[in-house]
Amino acid sequence: MKLKSIISFMMLLAAVLHISAQKKPNILWIYSDDISLELSCYGNPDVKTPNLDMLASQGTRYTKAYTTAPVCSSSRSSIITGMYPTAINSLDHRTINKMELPEHVKPVTEYFREAGYFCSNMDKSFKKMGKTDFNFLTKNIFDAIDWQDRDKDQPFYAQVNIKYPHRDFDYDKDNPIDYKTVTLPACYPDHELIKADWAMYLESIQHLDHVIGNIIQRLKDEGVWENTIIFFFGDNGRPHLRDKQFLYEAGLHVPLIVYNPFKPEKNKASTKLVSIIDVTTTSLDLAGIKVPEHMHGKIFMGENSEKREYIYGFRQRCGDAPDNIRSITDGRYKLIWNRRPDLPYMQLSSYKRLQYPAFTVYKYLHSKGELAAPFTNFMAEERPEFEFYDLKKDPMEFNNLSGSLKHAKKEKALKCQLISALKEFEKGMVEEDEATITKAKEGSVAWFTKAMAKEGYTGKISDEEMMEFWYQKLLNKSFK
Image (cartoon, rainbow, N blue to C red; front, top):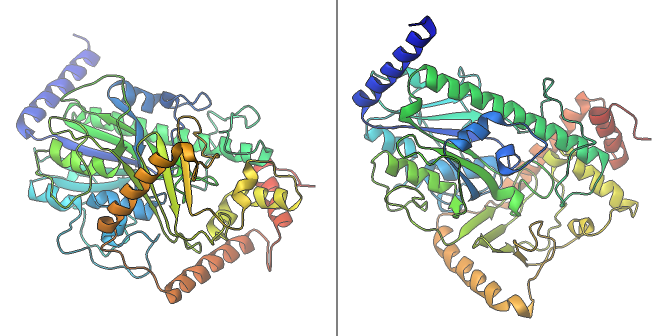
């Protein structure tokens, strides 16, 4: 027998012995920062994601999975507890006045620990603690960085947190993407800066896929691939204008791929509605742990699977951009409730002005009268209180049907459901006072000023200067 065959046989034998000795499955959550459905297994032709495609071919790809909030700290606080962020006072992004969790609520790691699991959290290097970013006071949520530190035959619950494709984007020198050939989603104007930025986003996703390959190989090398249930998902939608931090589809709609070696469903696509807090409850259930009654998540796979009727979305202050938005969808129709309709869509966001070229492109083109409809809708000084969309006919959410007689019955039904649900979900929410909001605004503006000073820009920076900044950075040429 050849040496290579002997090694493969020994690894397989070790894996079999490990599975029989351990008895309980390992649970692995792989987080991606700021991503929507831009993977080749979800139909995007411009990006190469062979490792995620392989994972999807060995499991189930969910096409209607959503986070509870369109920004990382709120969403991650929600996922680690299985609760909507309002119920645990964790909706304001990177909450300044952090509080303890409600007495009856615990991070999911506590339930895994009680069941004998080892809980770890690593970043893409496998050497550092991974991102947490919770909006509540915490301590000792994880046992260690690496699951290898567990006792022999002890099952693990682990997170691998991958920064890609969070901004700043990283070029993929091995597989570059020509921005001139990419297909932009129809929600963006066809502008060369936006296309160049989009190409870099896709290249960052290719870096993500490379890390996924490393994780898969490590699981196989350690003989735990066949004993580990994997959940891959995004913490919130893609980092582009009108997406991240908003409750439109691209702010909440994320990929979700599940590999379950115990009940394999190869290359399956599921259209069932899933909230990412359902990953929390489903993980507990698959590990044989009773799901606490207070959790808002539902079990979406396995013998105890439940049907979800609605997806809820939540947005409050993000950086120096205060807001108050809620949403509900049944998978076909979407209702967005702007509870601060006096605020413009394009209110100052220092984060977006610094890192989103489209933020400046929209403002500059609009000032020149060169921004075409329907993109001009996003420049309105005020917003409608309610937005209502038919996602099947209008996936870009441009045609607001709120007030339409034809859709009045459906809009009323979703509105009543949302208002009723919020009475329960918002019980634990404490709104920030003006002093806290002012502090957040001052901090964000100072961050922008310091970052631009490093680039040689000081004082009040005009939109034209920002256009020059982006042309130099993305296209290596002058704006004029």
